[in-house]
Amino acid sequence: SFQRYHLASAPVVDEAGRLTGMVTVDDVVHVIRDESEEDLLKLAGVSDAVVGDTVARTVRTRAPWLFLNLFTALSASTVILFFQNSIEQMTQLAVLMPIACSLGGNAGTQTLAVAVRSLATRELNPMNAARYVLREAMAGAFSGLAVGLLFALVAGAWFQDAKLGLVCALAVLANLTCATIAGTLVPLGLQRFGADPAVSSSVFVTWLTDTIGFLAFLGI
Image (cartoon, helix red, strand yellow):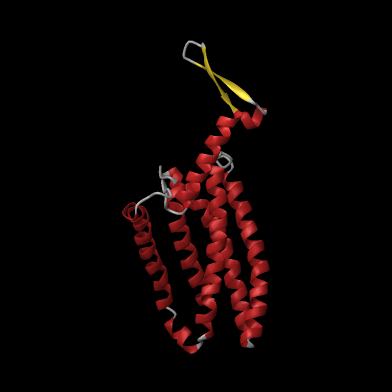
């Protein structure tokens, strides 16, 4: 309301309608700042962290998400097992594969940060979710096309193999498109099932982008 109606202050009344106090824009700014800091910490899986935390408390806060991340990373890495022969025959794949995956992970994280903020501010809701996902998918596809072409030129020149460059371009295009979709659908889905999207989204988005990245690059 403060943003919508450009208010400098707002009255606070009790159930009987009697004036009991006033909320100023300074109070709102403090709340917004605290909420944004909390969301940033939750995205990293370290909510309620402070500088004065003990080592034991810090480990208890972070370790569960690291354990979950370990299992999701192991499941994503199993994709590589299906393409062992291809990697043995063409070692260049092992050099370029992490690049294709890291690009997708970065794109997914960018989209996730925007989606979580939009959910917190009610800008993203079930009414406009489909349009929002479509917009992010198109943004991911165009970004993937631009970055993929550059990646293809570098990889093709590096290994003197135009076909390998084409594989890199297609893999990045597929991974960035899927990453932006995942970065939006994962927090939406978690919120739908009553979970806090700021806490657990990053682990699942990373898992999806790694899995899709390996599958797209090695599969193509």
